[in-house]
Image 1 (cartoon, rainbow, N blue to C red):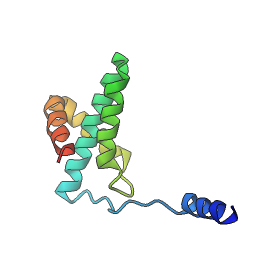
Image 2: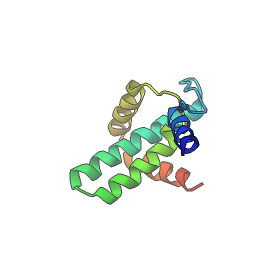
Image 3: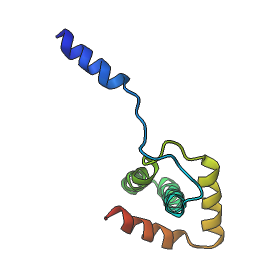
Length: 103
């Protein structure tokens, strides 16, 4: 019993870290931020419509990109959301990023 409790404690106390340090200079990292931003907008829409199934779907999709990195500045995500909305590219970006989650 002691070993089981110790094992659980060790698993819970281990630091969780992502594999990749976010680098804004890398195009693949910027593309991931664009997907995170697009899915964030999609989640906002789902929340406004009360569609919990869609909300969870886009949260899962977003996590596939977000959890790759140690830390992404929220300012980068917020800025990308504004750019997507202003360029009216939200729906096409959601479609592109959804395809990437299937690979």
